[in-house]
Amino acid sequence: MNEVSSAATAVLLFCFLFMMFVNLFVIRSKEQQLVSRLAYRTDRSLRARAVERFKRYAWLYQHLSDMLETLRMSILPSTFASISAMLLLVGLASGGIFFQSIKGTLLFGLLLGSLPYTVLRSLLVHRRMQTQMDFLPAVELFYQCYLITGERQIRIALQRTVEERRLLGPMQAVFEQLYRNLSVRGDDEASLRLLSASLGHLWADYFVHILRVALAEGVSVSDSLKELLTDMRKARRASEQERNRLLEIRVANFSPLLFLALFIGINLRYNKDNSYVYYVIDPMGRDMLLNAAVLIFGSFLMGLWLSRKKM
Image (cartoon, rainbow, N blue to C red):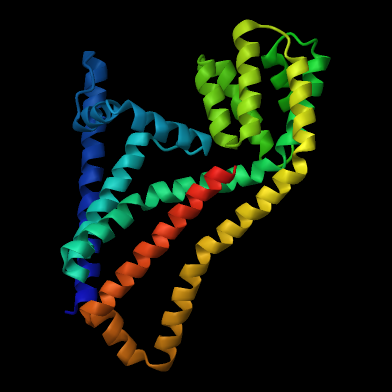
């Protein structure tokens, strides 16, 4: 059995065992929860204790919770952390078998372990880019509804804005989430923080600050909204240029991966046997593929960081 099949077998065996233990654990936890409800006992299962221990890292738990709720994903932060930890273990196991070096084990484990968070951040950046151009019309509609409702209640203006259903693109879902959180959540600051995380640019921070003042003090903010709209209209051309730069950054992120796939594909097309020996059997070839993966992953992270700075 060659190293590739050994690595695949190890990964499949690990995933199978993990899924089996998780299913058994879930069944056992459900039984204990039913017993605890009948006996009025608190949930002291291993999963509950692990979640409570994870919640002690308040900054990390809050960060993941806000990001998942911003993307409207029905995944608990503890579940997301468990998936990342599982991928980290799979990466460490398969990296040790395939690369047979400490460098390959650690780097491949870190790549797989950080993959879920990287995908989450890229989805968030994509969502923010979709909402950038539609933010100005959304604020204009909210300003009109705010004036119509008598400049009294932000929640009433938000309700009318949502019920109008004239918001463009994903802005409808963003404002619906804000109105739902302000009505049900009971924590205005957390609801506004989620709005700022959903949009992710400077104008959104100004808009959130205006809403925060209106909710906390109950004063009219029509002048502030009018001034914000005036400034946004003046800066609209500059924001379109920034959007083009963000598109260039995203294209540049995927270009190294495309060139690597093209280069390997050409070698496999014209010299399949030697390419397989060099890329898979030879340790230097595997190390080259690992270095390429690390560099591409690093360039992708740099692109996400630059996108965040540009917004």
